View 1: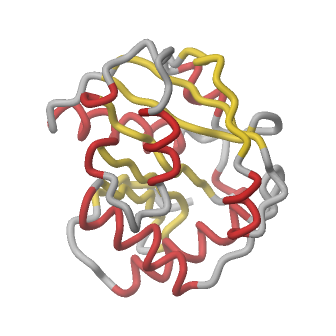
View 2: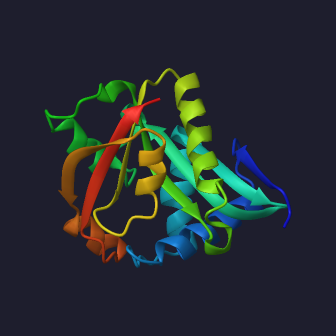
Length: 190
């Protein structure tokens, strides 16, 4: 197996964007989400949103994208970003035990099945933690499927705590054709 490298994306490169889209669509088509996306939707709503306002890190085997991670400062989520429903939900709650204005939302994590259980997901998360700290953030928060999540244990092993908050995303889930209707939140210090 080729060596794996973790890189931060700082500009739009076609081959990286195509690889990102392939991994995104493949991983989120699996359980527990069973979501379907077009390349155009992934590019506009995930790739470009994070490239402009947040962070994208990729795991590469040679030049092949095998994993991805995206994050964004909660306060930088803008109205046309699909993550606006996360921001609105969190800022309407009074029981969040962290300062949301100093919080990074860990919005996406995905690793192709053949590359799982090799520490790649952990490396993608840790790289985003470093980027968030460098950007002056103190906390992170993430959202995942209430049951069947592949990323939950990764975050818990890196010090995350269950926020005890469940969100019904039925309206949003219909827009993205998801079978996962309830999401839970984890949070922690960077």
